[in-house]
Amino acid sequence: LEKNGGHNGTAGAEEHVGHPHDALYFLVGAIVTGTFVMHLTTFVAIFKGMQQTVLLFVIGCISSVILTELHGKSGPAGRSYNMWMHIDPHLLLWALLPPLLAGDAMTIDTFVARKVAVQCMYLAGPGVLINSMIFATFLWKYLPYQ
Image (cartoon, rainbow, N blue to C red; front, side, top):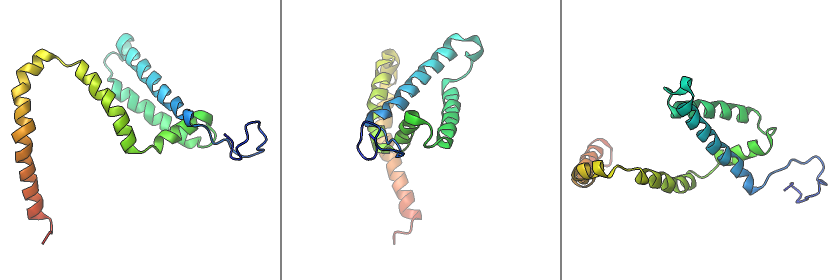
């Protein structure tokens, strides 16, 4: 919507502030880019040895520099980028964590999980408690609480 609420272009020279669904441009672009990189590193011989995360990081850095420099001139893609850069981190965590955990849970090797279950329970229970007490003792000793 335009700043004065007009839909027919009568706002004159005022800037277009966008719509809430503009945020989807960046999300869909990121998913398409990730899919493209995955296929590129899987099927193209030159890129077979390259890690996907490194390539995605480089693409992300380049995209960020370009979209930051074009602030205000990049249209809906730039508005979408700005929306994602100003998103609440907790919203991002709680929106993306469940699909990531579900994806990892669906690909778990149950044979290996059964073999290491006792070790996992040992680390999750007493291991966490012992390390918490050691850390608390360190903080109590070296931080000026008294």
